[in-house]
Length: 395
Image (cartoon, rainbow, N blue to C red):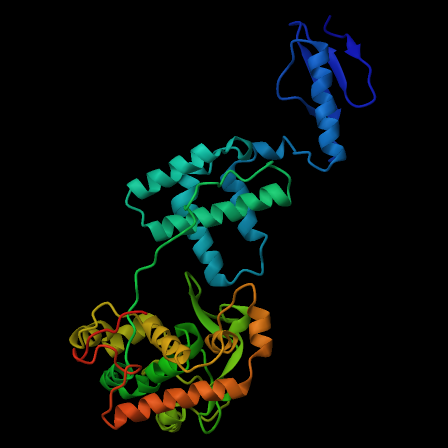
């Protein structure tokens, strides 16, 4: 009984000593594969082989051996095989995998993942006190990994990450500073950091972008800055210079005329003559400015608390600049180009933005500063002017 074999054009079937039938077939990978289970009849085994043959001919075949690979191993390789990821993104992905995915799902075979299993994993993370934001980031990473398993590696027929709303996060509402508050904050900083605050706000620059600026990246009259790189803090490596956060992040930003004198003063006082000298450095080391050192030297936490702005982040300066610029009456594509924001239309936004539009934005920002210096307040300047120092709500 055990050596009776069926003859057919694709694959083969044979009856085992138990009386049940086994099916085997050659896969597109050149290996012989055995059905994961035996069949009660020869006809059932042949029907299964016909199904596999159809899947192979239609390009829908899934490799059963790859489906046995643990998720943790596959996800680790997924990150490694994406050299175009920014260093900070790689660090985030590995942290999410190590902290929130691998300990709970990492040992499960790819082929055994299910929507119910992933739904329970998400619920357990939230119940354990993990924030919705972090949980959503971990879920989106897992979904991206499994998308590759479906679309490229043909390990899964469909992505089990189908939990409604699991990819969404609701970030806390951030404050919008007024022009007066930004100048007040800049005046409370050590003199060498005054221009740092002003450029971040009026140039809509990220921390990594503004701290990576060199003398060659800024006009002699401080009329513009060119953003072509950004610093990121990598665990075990320190500060690493790389490309901006997005493709659209490579840009030239017009600086409002009203704040250019502050920037020129900084260039004359604190920046070396070499074109590669950094605009902002540590006071003692002269090296690139790191965020912890800046926070400590500027006493950022204490300063913003005294201003009634407890919890204010440095990134809120860029946020304020983006809001001001959005009120300058320019098109969405010109505004997005100034901010260096990237999405599916980022290339078009960046390529079609004009310097004339950026000039209009800068001029409008200068008018806001002039109004502030003349002691005026406008709806654009201080939406909450009956409460000095109060944070304006995000529109």
